[in-house]
Image 1 (tube, rainbow, N blue to C red):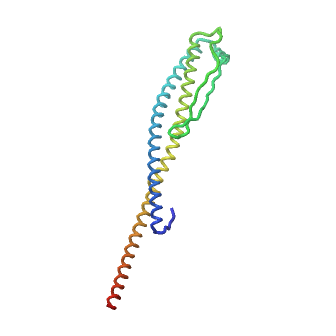
Image 2 (image 1 turned 90 degrees about the vertical axis):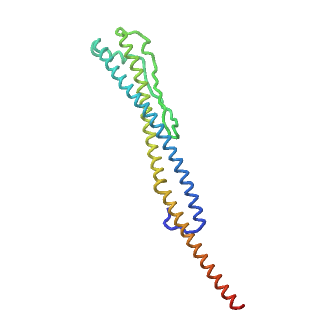
Image 3 (image 1 turned 60 degrees about the vertical axis):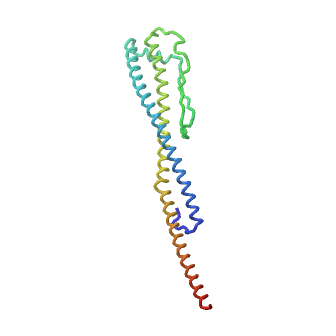
Length: 211
């Protein structure tokens, strides 16, 4: 904001136009922040639900693993899992949420762990494998939600700073300058009217001398 502005009507019109734009921008930023906050809360609720599900699944998986390992000699289960013809990966796709770049994660498990029978392959081991796959998908979903929470929170902070800058700095400055220039122009108008009146009185006085 310049420290010195010419107090004229053209400048006043420019400042009023800037003020209208600033107020419009403030409303848009405020609406965006409200939408981001709403979406953030929705994702946060879902994240909490999935996190609780993951924690419960991990506990169940640990108990199942402990049972299976206790039923076999040491190293048998580890060796069995190493032989399974299965690979896992995560695909990440960029998406948009309320105008913010977010991600969509998809867990993929390739191969069939039940394609062959091993000597020590029993129902509990089968349950453990299936449970591990379920946990994998749950963890991928949780990772997606929590990363998107971070991205949206970062955008919310940027938007909040812009809203505050408009609300607490730019708009009050523009309003103050408009008020100052309007008062100065009123003062100039009064001085001009006063001079015109004096000139008019002088002309009338001179006219009366020649009558």
